[in-house]
Length: 118
Image 1: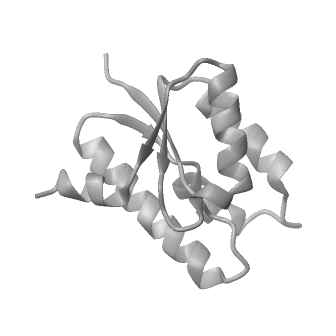
Image 2 (image 1 turned 60 degrees about the horizontal axis):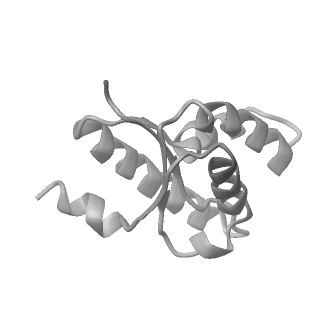
């Protein structure tokens, strides 16, 4: 059975360009992992495009409710250590939830995932 991984990564930022870049990186990381046999849920890759169609904008509670349903079903939580990950409210909540559920948490640099492609 393949490992189901919840890929946590920072997203929120006042600059829309930063949010878009984080979405692109998270999507690429998820793709690399999938190509290497993991079953991956990236909330950023999933939620970023959907958010354009939700009005008025929703806060953390809304998105964490959506995301925790997926996190709870995963075997592992991987945190993509992009700039800002240590300060991310969402990542703090996701890691806390994983620890409560006894789901292993791993910090993964993007460079490590990119090395899989060489």
